[in-house]
Each structure stands twice: as C-alpha cells, then as structure tokens.
Image 1 (cartoon, rainbow, N blue to C red):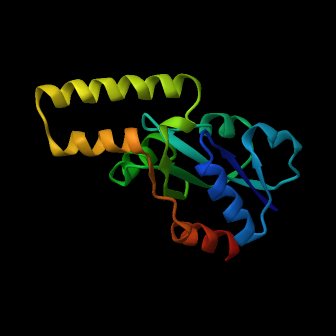
Image 2 (image 1 turned 60 degrees about the vertical axis):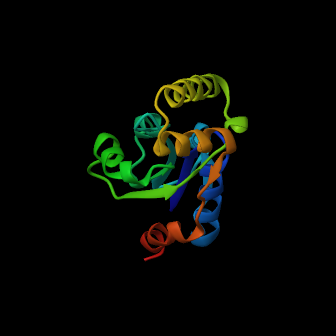
Length: 159
C-alpha cells in the first residue's frame, strides 16, 4: 500500500494531500506521523520555499521508497529548477499553491514581511508592473489551488 505524506505550512499542501487520498484511496498523514504508517512506499507533497521542497529531506531520511513527489508553489515557471534541485530522479508533479501572509507562521512570516518592505522600497525608487504584481500577492494573497492539477498524480497512483 502507498501512503501520502505531506508537509504544510498554511494548509494548501494538506488540502492537496487529503484530496489525493480521497481520489486514490491511499491514506494520508502529516510527515511527522510517518512512523505510525503501515506502508510499502510513499508519495510526498511539500510546499516550495526558496527553491526547496519543504520536508522532502526529512521524507528521504525515513528510508521509505518514494513513488512520486509533489511540489506546491506559486511560480510555475520555476518548476523545472525545483525538480532539478530536489528530486531529479523521481516522478515529479507541480501543484499550483496559495499564499496568505496572515496564515504564515514563525520565521516564514518574518521573512515575508521583510520581502514586502524590500519590494515597497524598490517600487518607490523604480515603479514596475512585475514588482507591483508580486507586492499584490504578498498584500492580498493568492489562491491557485486546482483539483485538476492532481489528475496526473491520481492517474499514476490508480493505474
């Protein structure tokens, strides 16, 4: 049996893991519960921060065979770099994520706040459309969650 493990900071990756579980019949657990799983192999879903899939290193350290990795992020154009950096030899699925500054916790919230200040300073010096768009994501949030994006991974797990 395959178990879906996930690492989620604001809930979006958890939403994908639970939906994937519902569609495939595979159980899902947060990564910190991996020792309680009776499983043959795993699928891991993690969120992207700074080009790293959060939790993937810990997932690999469990020793469970990985069937696939899902990366939840905002910037789809970065997906090839994320795959290359984190899991070039595994089936990889990019899932569009969400961002809500109010839901961030700990150092991530602090770092995002600093990024907002930097963007605002840059916009004062040299206004540009791309920076205004990114600032809008930070200030207003964005939700790109897509059930359809899971289809290829569902197909892999149910084939």
